[in-house]
Image (tube, rainbow, N blue to C red; front, side):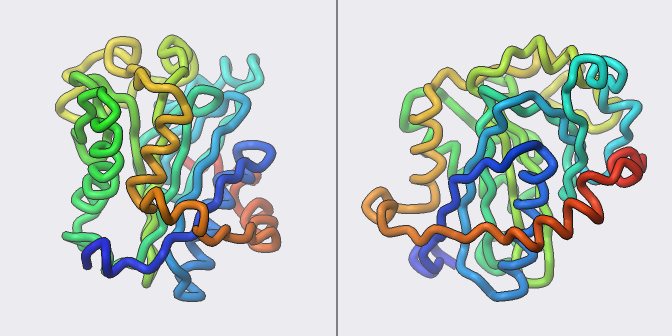
Length: 252
């Protein structure tokens, strides 16, 4: 499927209060799109406070410095998609793309789909100057240092890829609240510490936001992009059954 074959995107620039509600919103949008055969969607958001977000199968004791997070009021959450553990908050722009399963090349290969999604964004960012490239299974990197990670979730007819782009998040905070993953390390990391491996993208937030939007919505179409609704009832269900449940968050 080419760009010309994709239906017009819907837009949602929405940050809900707290990390749990925002993770629930991503999953709710995916469930709703899969159920209703809805058009593609691009969501952007940025949490105003720090939070640690683990992938669906990450082990808490390995991925998170739990005692320090609890002592310093940093939330600990788990998302429903795969991938590793990330620190989000001010200076970390999140985006979510929801598309039909058959819209991406190599759609049966998870890594290939993530590289395709991140590659579109990288192309727009390179046009602004920084030599951004896609490395690993779905990272954006700048001169060999990671500035964005991504994760994926698939349902029957729709898939979701969400990513975090760091632009003003002190790398020292990552080492403060995250453990070093013993297994989930891409080869290009070469055993480096968080401080040596992670970097911020040297672009202002408005420029990054514009690049992310331009990767999926032509500039002339942006003002006319339909705004997606927030599925409040489904978010509430997911919050109660999953995202705020400590047994689910700490299940590994």
